Length: 241
Ligand code: UDP
Image 1 (cartoon, rainbow, N blue to C red):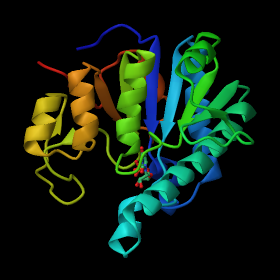
Image 2 (tube, protein in one colour):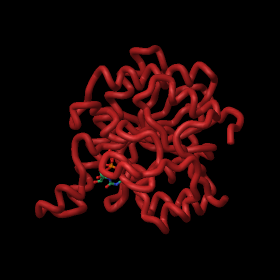
Image 3 (cartoon, helix red, strand yellow):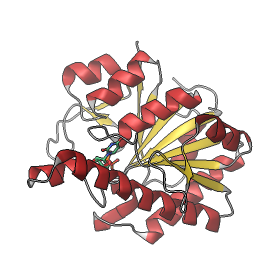
């Protein structure tokens, strides 16, 4: 299944990936090691756009389950992603990687607003772009943001970095020892089987726009580089197979 190197990728980093073993907040050593891995990829001349999650700080669903208005709780989640985005920018610039943060909710003092053509220009100039603030709309997720931005900037693939699992399994491998890891899948399988890869809105968007997804572990150093190089790691999910 090995294929050539990708030239433009969207890397989806969940909030959980930035929290490391702490499970919440931002672990500076973890974020620095992720920044190093991204720097290795930029050195290969690959254009990298990162979509950051916010679940390590706040999740809208959790807030609304405790009685908060869902839209308000979701806006708080979107703000959480901005904090993660700024932390990642700081770590990347420490590694000497020019980086721009763009937010879907305007906050001019801290980041640029999301402007598609400007984002593409940054990528062409080999700047890493961080998309923060999700889609800017409640009731969506940052997985859907990754699918949407990938379609908009014509990325060839979404790299979904996980910190607790190394691919897609038939069941939760931490609970069910008989869980089987898939090498490849279709988005239709993901939707039909209800596999916990990404939410159904995000899966449909990837399927409809034919954007492949690679799910892999970020805990193994060098894995982002392997993924962009087209090595067989993790699970690849495609539109049809
Ligand atoms: N969110 C939202 N709209 C978006 C993206 C995110 O409302 O387009 C909110 C939502 O409340 C979500 C939170 O931001 O729970 C954090 O994002 P997500 O759960 O996707 O982060 P991750 O699981 O990747 O850490």
